[in-house]
Length: 342
Ligand code: ADP
Ligand code: MG
Image 1: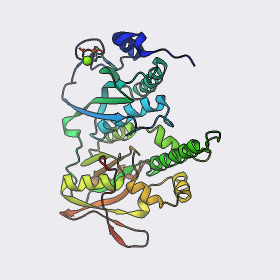
Image 2: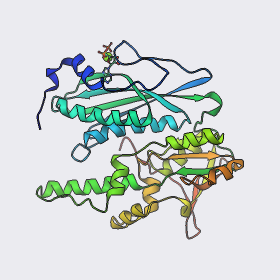
Image 3: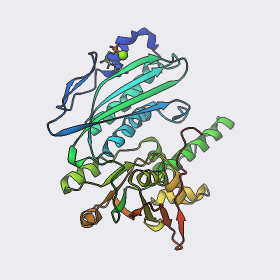
Image 4: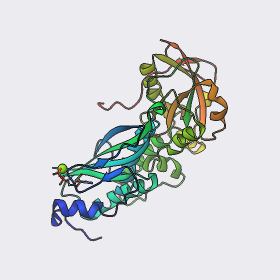
């Protein structure tokens, strides 16, 4: 494969080269890349939500098994997931990168191809960013803007006693995908000639490398006129997110182990790693599903959605969150989510 040095284009040439194929899809985009700031029109009656995330090579991703195209896609998706978690619809993103001369233009093209795919899939516009050199490695920061009618916004705060606690999709897969990739990396480092053994692990690896954000749920809420009383996206494991809802609402949550959705593929891989599938769901990370509470009056609408599982309910104020196991025991839910500083 040919290698073009980033320095050969200059900063402006590089920005133009990487961003020129991004389409403008949103009416609210007044000005995109190329001015001092982007200009966004907030539609009448809406409020804007804004979120940002930073991804650092060696901390958040490992390029020995993460293809740059997937990394670009995921960097966008994890931001959009935060916007959806506010019950908002994402419209614009900015992307800032710091990149060392280890990376070629072709590598950056791969990264931006992944970001373009995500922008097209979710209908969001890339409207700006910043480009810097780094001494070593790659850092990516994505910010996203979304819009929601004021009365429809969902925060982490307003869960009420008796609300249903629900989750989309299935949990634990992304964590196991990471375990498989880490295992194969170790094998490769020990004996570089050996081909990685990835067959049978497609589902969990896909959950790790190519997560999707739950746009469908926000659309469903809008069509069904449901406003969740609280919502959060699952980036650090179910247990950690439940404790966020508890802390922010002042109400404990009760969940039932048997109701936690876990894909058959995830269960099978967990067994191979001698892990309990429910532990992967509670304490694994990066599933990017949505966890939310709704009033009991929405029970029928919610239970008609096949991608939603009702896993429990909101308890009394000042109660502590807990899980009822399959065996009928009650155990406290503790924070075992990813600790950013460990
Ligand atoms: P300034 O020096 O005024 O911040 P820049 O030269 O950094 O301007 O950026 C010029 C334009 O290109 C701006 O619209 C900026 O948002 C955009 N831009 C810069 N870097 C990126 C990037 N990595 N991805 C997308 N847009 C970018
Ligand atoms: Mg700048």
